[in-house]
Length: 295
Image (cartoon, helix red, strand yellow):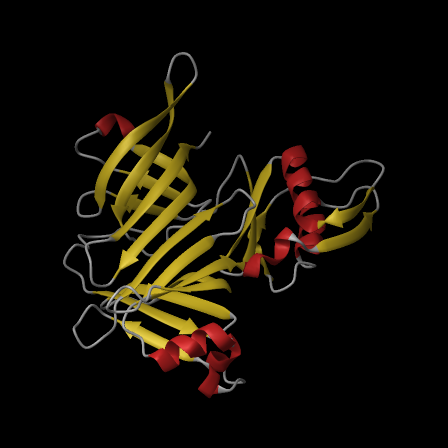
């Protein structure tokens, strides 16, 4: 994906709250909340901080809305279970940047706009406590085991194209009873893959590979880049990148750095962890990426 200068593009955030089936045609629309912000004076301010990774901990978000009525704030706090946040530039398709379950709502009544902050976890944090009891015969494919275990996590969608692991599980089969997270972590350590839940979808990818999507980060997008160094010789193994928000970038995908200042850092990197800072009425509209060289 090639991105031109995004500085002057109009920014948009859309927050959906409540029973998300309302937006699929089966729910009670009076219980759902939709807030659209494009930065204009006629719309409310939305600010979001979102952290995503491939290290088997829940992706998290803090989404703050300013200027809501007391009735709407109470509606969110009393009855809302889930949120979806979309981000996009004018003229582009909206992108789902976070989907999760609300853990807590915090209201700041000392601020004149009385902002409410929704603290949420991807997959509603279900995989942190999901129990499994499984057994497998010898020769079963690793991918089938991973899909089976992940499919037992409540509220998680399985997409075959988002599971890129290979190999067979043991010569004597395998049995396990305990937490799904612990079992997937054990398999990941043994067979060399990372996993997470991204916008409600289970993802797993070999440590030697990544999802075959690459985004160019260069002029008009890149803000700064600095090396990640390791070992006695301080060898560069990756790069910390700060850039304007670019739709489609996600952990386990690739970015191609093209810096005119630090040319020695240029190259292809696999995204490990990323943080989105999005605000429709402030300067924050950036992503910070921790990435590593592949191979």
